[in-house]
Image (cartoon, rainbow, N blue to C red):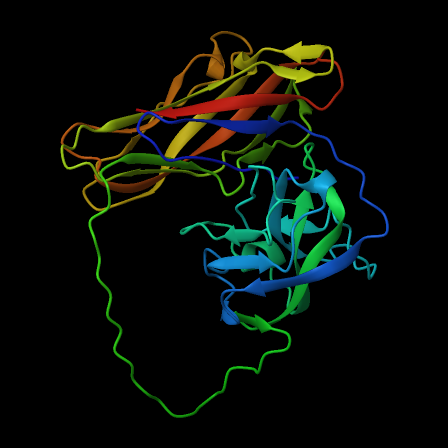
Length: 329
């Protein structure tokens, strides 16, 4: 399942869901109720985003109107069927503002620079694939009905199934393109995710503890303020809960990294924080993910982190969920 959050304001704070393990049962009798229209009819499987936008031909059902996502369906087990839970792979981002039953159509717009390309989802597979706009319930369970279209992947490119394959030769022409660019309002923005959802593998026994690891969804910070005050992004995790059972957020640690940044931006990653299994408070206290010093910071930086979870072996079984709150000031 997928969930997405975004903030675009000075001093914004964003909540990011963390799930340790757990699956939702697949809905039965799934069927297409309409079409998906893509902004492009062909492109590279390595492009991020996959397309500029995708639109459904109608709204979401009322019971599944909390969210929506653009997904590629992959028959991973080769049984000739498509499971809407385990074989649905988000091309990001996932909408989650609700009310998608009140609109004439649902539009999912791509996020520039996303690592969730078509190639990362298909893992080298070629041929015909189904794209869906999937509507999601309050619990982010997929609706049994969906909007769909089909694409064909050949080599390093994709095209709509019903479109003409790109020619190997042909004639060339020219057009002049003119646009007027206006300076945007000065602001500090932060975008979380592709979908703001991290699922850590089931913790495995490692000596005297249970251990699991994963990757934080990318966090993009953009600053165009001419005063160049610099900025700092921090994060703090809540306790993990599964019904009546909980464990402290201190058991989660991380190793931050700067995935990319603009030239001269001066962004540095925060210090590594070990899980507080033996000592320390882990990420239960606010910890720096990345920062830019005063006098720099102009541009866009993508921040990441390797997550590490270490738990006592006496932790009760269950699917635990916590919230990681990211703040940029």
